Length: 289
Image (tube, helix red, strand yellow):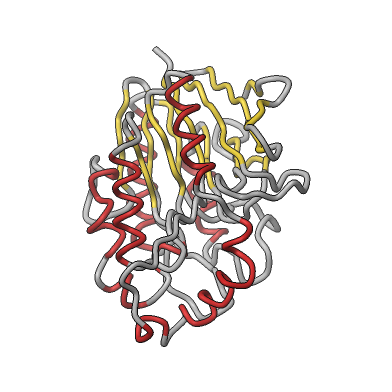
């Protein structure tokens, strides 16, 4: 049976309840200013509620969110996110993005894993990431690129040790004949990310895919639709980036968005949905990969 799931990303749910000035004496100072001047007006968390409603209406078996669930990695934000996901009414899989490890303190205390670990249950081999969730003939492979960085910088890194584990996991899952869906936050195509927003070990990640393969790679981060492919050992591996799930923009390919997937061995379909200012509307045709 195909796995039917909804993919969204970069929902940036905000809750500053209980936050005190001392928590902004770091990178959050510039992030807080950005929230006040721009980001807070560009995102509406009610769109995430609409996505969840659509997932239930489509009888999706799972909701997949590829990072940036928060804005500033504050505890109240994680409490809000956890409540929303628990109330979603269907299983949820998440991975972290750069906003979820916004400061060194949030990364050091593993705040994302502490609050949202229940949505990353799966097989591991020597580290938090990657994790593998086996769902029938499909395996979701969750990768982390989330690292704290300097103000106005949003880079990511997989890291050598995680890449080694990822290579082994993809090789084993491929040998078992499973359809491998890799979840990652940062874009993995050359030139897809803006300056200072890129994946620092993009080439090394690409080398793993070239050697071991995958059937689909999903990401977020750039708040726009990105379609492409990476070379794999048996042909191109589709790469899909989705726009921010809560973005109010009406610029082409930068709308708020989510995708509905049906994934089975040898058969993957996608229907991309974008926010038109009043409703999420589906693309005229599903993409058959």
